[in-house]
Amino acid sequence: MTDRNGVEHPGASDAPHPEASDAALPGTSDAALPGTSDAALPGTSDAALPGTADAEGWRRLHPLSPLLRGGLVLLVIAGIIVANFRDRFVEVLFISGLLRDDDRVDIDVSGEGDFIDLVDYLVEEGLALLALGIAAAAILLIVFFSWIAWRFSTYRITSDAVEARRGVLFRSHRRAPLERIQGVNLQRSLLARALGLTKIDVLTAGQGGKVELSFLGHRDAKLVREQIIRRAAAKRGEPPIAAPAAVDFAGRAYGEASGRLAQRAQDFADADIAPEAAETHALVRVPVGRLTGSIALSWESVVTVLILVGIIVGGAVLEPALILGVIPMLIVMVGITFSQFNKGFNFVLSRGRDSVRTGSGLTATATESVPFGRIHAVEARQPLLWRPLGWWKMRITTAGHSVAQGGQNSTQNVVLPVGVEADVLRVFETLLPGLGDDERDLAELRDGLSGRAHAYLGAGPRAGWVLWWGRRRAGATIADAETQNATMRVRRGALTRSLTIMPIVRAQSVQLRRPLVHRMLGLASVQAHTVLGPVRIEMRGIELGAAQGLFDRLAAVVLRVQMADAPGAGEPGAGAGGPDAGAGAGAGAPDAAAPGEGSRDAGAAVPDAFRAEPSRAEPSRAEPTSAPRLDRGEAAP
Image (cartoon, rainbow, N blue to C red; front, side, top):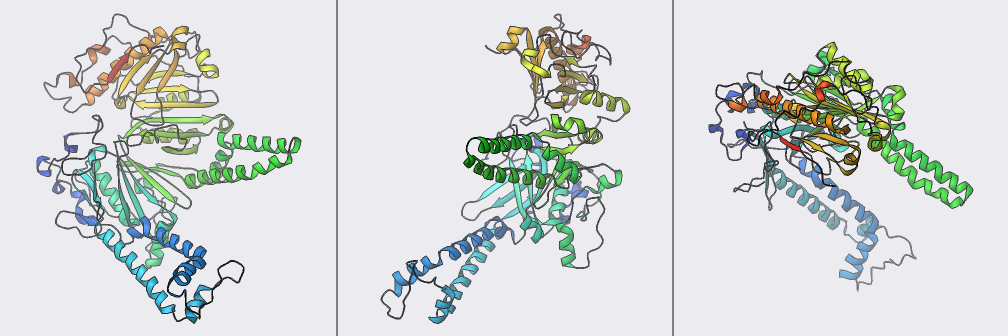
């Protein structure tokens, strides 16, 4: 969205977000935000940021930024063109030009004579200095325009937004309100690592909303990231921040660098692990051997190997020329395998003071920082071939991704490429505060991952027609329904098992639907909607009466939790937004089924917590606008 001043606000056109507040509205001045000025944020003073700010607080990026954004690419392209077409340049510039009628010049470009040595020719004709002058002028022009681009590329961090400006003839101004920031990522290509530079991506809740700061010095980029996350978390009274020291993959800080070369080497090898995580042992690592084994046993590798075997057998039996098809398949397989290995190499997940951080990479490295409260759903997945080894893969849904990124991309938002059950439990505890704090929570998580799921509502008696072999595992439950940490949990899958957990406070709407096949079999599906992402929270194949009970109870819990979480919920006269909001709708809902009540198997007794209650009134149309949308209806055949 662009305001009347031409300023682009990523994500500003989205629907109201749970974390968004009036401070995120464009045009809101600092004076209108008491308590949020820079003076009120002693731990995030601008004096700690790199560089010198102008009167309005704008700072410049690293001087080499324009070259990394495109200058080096132009030089490489020019070098390739000159190396491959220099004979044609000689023909056009000299034979067809000024020297066409000069008898002293005898050049053969027909391809039948010897190849022309351009350098020797220039030296013999006394044109070497002219050629060097032209090359120097071209380099000076590139440097000049790069300097101009650098002078017009600035950024600033205010008390309510992160802003970036760039462009000379065509100016762009992007602004990310702090309340809408979903993550701060550091990206370093191999060339950027060699030069000690890092790009910062500030992700917002809008579709495609991203503010790029490219590039800063590596330690300066880490300092700016801490500044953004600290302000986004609205911290007060924190100690002055400093650039985090470079650390190894064990989280230990390197010693004092003896010089710039040693410092550059430390920055190149920096694992970028949150310092607090190493102190509290809140680290989850992926060994290289386990990563290699997981890639070899993934569905992509297995399918590729089967295709290769089929091609070889077909070539041996039918036509030997078919074996040539192995070559492109091998090239593709090697590329995909190396890409997965490169992205997962030395993967580390750590929990810092204000965010959850993941980092990985062999040649190019990427570090993602997600502030607490920005994670909408978490999913643990276990492919069939990983099951004997007890390996799992985890990914999350956060706001701020495009429609293409929200699809079923196997590498999208991965927070654990491969890990054992203990790693999965630690990741759940790290990503969802309040989950896994005691042995009871851990036992419930294990029961949902690979146990019998005693407290889960199972699929209906005819669900085998829609769930196939996944009918026996399918189940859903609402955990901790009486607390603000309530979550909806769905487990499903046969060839690939999964357990999905969504904090109730993140639900955008709740839906009961009955596609044609479900209607014919007396079944229904219950789904909780959150922001667009790879994790889907839906339980299919539920018996109709049990589905209605699950929908009613889920709607009541969502209304109660989100009303209590709304601003001013505990103030007198808060009305529907008070802490008891939604209690009337959920008063008739029984408590969650204790372990042992009900069964996950189809056709067994339905837990009392999920039985339909016809006497309960449907949610009123007069609910406050902050309440989630409740959709209880049947899909058209």
